[in-house]
Image (cartoon, rainbow, N blue to C red; front, top):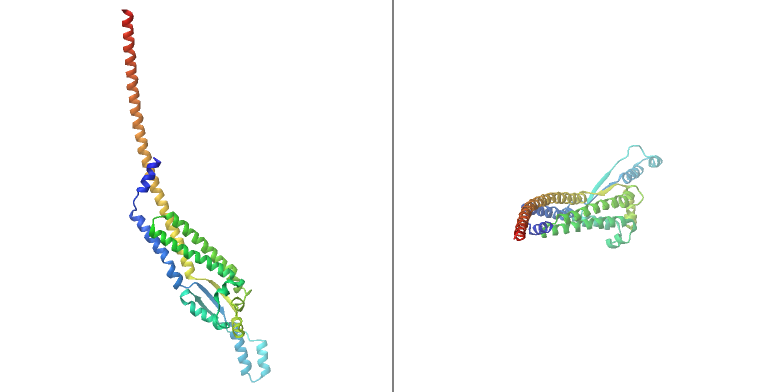
Length: 293
């Protein structure tokens, strides 16, 4: 029966549900690439309050009629302080704009390869981005598998790996890169190797990075990989139930055949037994006749 089931599985044609599974999976996997390119990958928020308040105090000194009074205001500023927070996003589609900002702070063009590979402060960011890149590659592999064949188990394994690596990537980014910056342990000028004096002063005058995290592109990709995983597991469960029902039906048929064969064998055995007894009786009668003669 097992060999027959294997032959049936090999001969099994793809149903409309199988085709729908492959199409949906391919669409979800393909959606990863425009999302990564066009949507925002990183969100940051900068606090300019210190810089603005210092400028306001200097302005008060320069505009004060009494120089001593202006200095006292600088040393003991009033409780009215300006709070200015700006935020922004980094995405691959607008990378040139972000790169130009970094270049304006540094001396000359920034060598991003050396900056990423030889800077210990950026190592967690590099690891995090590398893991995220693997997730994108897995999405490409899932797309190819979905287009070429119907293998929900393979797709489930790939998407599950993608979800796991994405979670690890986010943890590394937050703990190893974002938190030290937000907590003030590292400055922007140190991290980006801003050697230009004016750029360094400006970067440090930004005050504190109050928020730094992955944004829509990252979490949408994780959502898509998770959706592919759930979708594939559901299909595996449906297929396994279908195979179990088929196997059960085959087993019942085999059992019925076995019972029929058993009944037939019993009948044949009874017939043989009767024939044997009849033959024995005939032999006995012949013997008796011979003895009587």
